[in-house]
Structure formats: structure tokens, C-alpha cells
Image 1 (cartoon, helix red, strand yellow):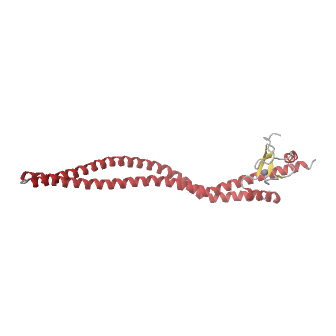
Image 2 (cartoon, protein in one colour):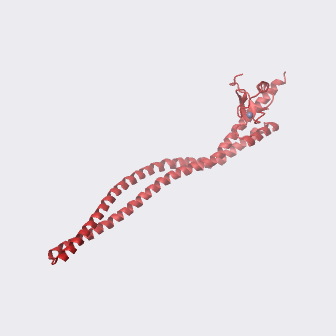
Image 3 (cartoon, helix red, strand yellow):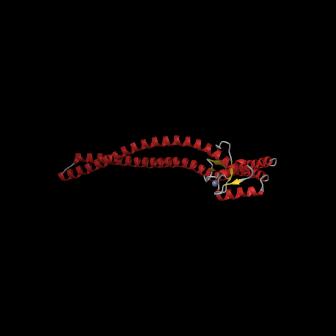
Length: 248
Ligand SMILES: [Zn+2]
């Protein structure tokens, strides 16, 4: 019996090292994933700024175009007003009915055109006031979002730039841990990790493998609890251990 105790300790130590390795590999995986999602996050933050900027630019452009249209209409109204005054003066010196009818018709047409232009001007003034409000709001929103997003972008940049160093640190940690894991055990670990992904060292849950839920025989459970050697799940190949929170 004396030999069982060191053996159990040895297996326990191996399991602990495997779990340490598993944590390092998880961290490495997260770092690898962060190479994808950190740039995505940066892109989203930049896009958010761009969208408001585009909205602001569009509103400013519409404002400019509408202002130009307003000026041109005002000029048109002024010109037509002068023409109208001229026609109205001519009314004083009318000689024939025909002349009178022609002049009345010209005056009516001019009045109608002036009326149409003035209606358009009023619509533009209303539109411009809406645009003014929209531009103010967008500017305010933009400055808030720019401030916030630039802060976050700076943090993300630092994170992205440090990935390489963090990976190098984890690689070193990994190299140190695996030196104390027996080659055979390590090869089980590596094979399952490559083949299945995710955690390799798994606690028994409800008398089954905690990963694939394949139930375990009472004999196997006893063996795992005994901790004489490293046991794997017959179905998924993951390394199983007994956690004391599991009901006996
Ligand atoms: Zn399994």
C-alpha cells in the first residue's frame, strides 16, 4: 500500500499541471480570438463616428443647396416684382381693350409666379430651420461620441499592441509547464485539444463525462476517484478527474 500514496500524489500533480496547461491554452486561445474581435470593435467604434459625420455632412450640404435655392428664388421674386411694377405703371397709359387684356394677363401670370416662388421660399425657410436643429444635434452627438469612442479606441490600440508580448509570455509559461508533464499524458492532452477543442481536463458530472455526458460505469468512477492513473473518457477521449463537489 505504501507505493499507492506517492502514485496518487503523482497523478494529482499531473492533473494539476494539466489544468494549469489548460488555463494557459485557454488564455492563448483568448489572445488569438482577440486578434479578430479587437479590430472588429475598433471598426465598430470608427463606423459609429463616421455615420454621424456622414449625417452631419449630408445635412450641411442640403443646407447649402437650399440656401442657394432660396437666394436664387429671392432674386427671381425681386426681378418679377420690378416687372410687375412696370406693367402696373403701363396700365395708366393703356389705349385699347386688347392692350388692357394682354397686360392683365401678363400681370396675373407674374403674380402667380411670384406667389409660387414665395411659397417655395417659405418651405425652404422651414426646411432650413429643421436642418439647423438637426445639424446642432448631430454636432453635439458627434463630439460626445468622438470623445468616448476615441478613449475606447486608445485602450483597444494598447490591447492590440500588447497581444504579441502576452502571447510570448504565455508561450514561455506553457513551455515551462509541459516539461513536468509526462510525454504520454501530454500527447493525450494535445491530441484531444487539437481534435475536439475546448477544455481537455474535465470533471465527472452526475456520474458522466462533464463534456460529452457519456455516463461512466461505477467501476470507472471508483478508479477515477482512486486517482491511481490518468483516466480518459471512452467516448470523447477527454481526461477525467473527480471533483469533491460531485456527490459520491
Ligand atoms: Zn467524454
